[in-house]
Amino acid sequence: MAAETTLGPNTYSRSNQDQRDIALDRVLRVVAYVVLILVTIVTIAPFYFSVSLSLMPQEETVRLTLRDVLLPSGIQFDAYREVLTSSDLPRWFFNSTLVAFIWVVARCLFDTAAGYAFARMEFPGKNLAFLMIISTLMIPGMVTIIPKFIILNEMGLLNTYGALTIPFLASAFGVFLMRQFFENFPVDLEDAARLDGASRYRIFFQIALPNAGAALTVLIIASFQGSWNNFLEPLIFISNPDLRTLPIGLAYFQQENVINYPVQMAVAVVSTIPIAIVFFVFQRYFLQSSTSSGIKG
Image (cartoon, rainbow, N blue to C red; front, side):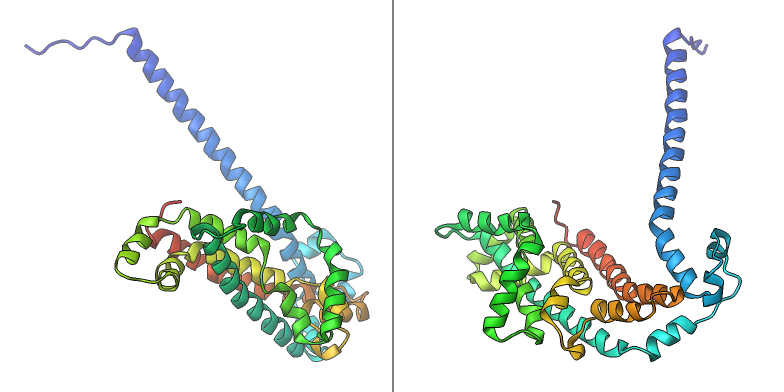
């Protein structure tokens, strides 16, 4: 004869607690979705408004309303056509691309090598040197512009590509980032390679660098963004119109079209698209490197 099952008060108490936990989990999930949606709207709204205004006829921007921005009645590409035909955009784009490429390559080499040296090698004054490098992060960029200008002037590099690249070939942030990564990098892999007779340089290039994809991706994105948006130093160091980068050239072009809002927004969109492309491309590599390397931070 089957035994009878008796449900005591503890069973009902646990059931009620489980139901309350499920209800609380649903509420928290809804709140999380609402917050994410609001953050997404706040993040995307400025770029959407820029694109919307750039596609509107200029006469419509005079009586502009929020409804017109959200749902523009007429879409045209005259602003983009004017930016492409009335400015030296290809030259500015080439200068910015060249400078950004030099920034990225140099920082990936110098910052990575310096970070690896600080993390793995022992030499006199290592901690003091690293402290001095990190302390430069606390110095405002405005303070270093005049010393940079004087040094570049003495070297005869003003109004050259050297003024746009040489002072920025390495960064304290990049050195700190790579040092922190290599300090958490498994030493066993390097010890095994060292037992097989691998030199320090071979370990660095064949073991450390291939597994540093996540940190390198962050460094590449930060370096490209810093170069692409750099405005103050090129404005001071460069007076030759042929060497203007995209932010400088577009700033002068905006001054000539100060009351033409579609053109100004088209300029903003054109300058933003390359950064967005680089971010989304390297974000994929960042996810792949962090999941396939098998290294846990």
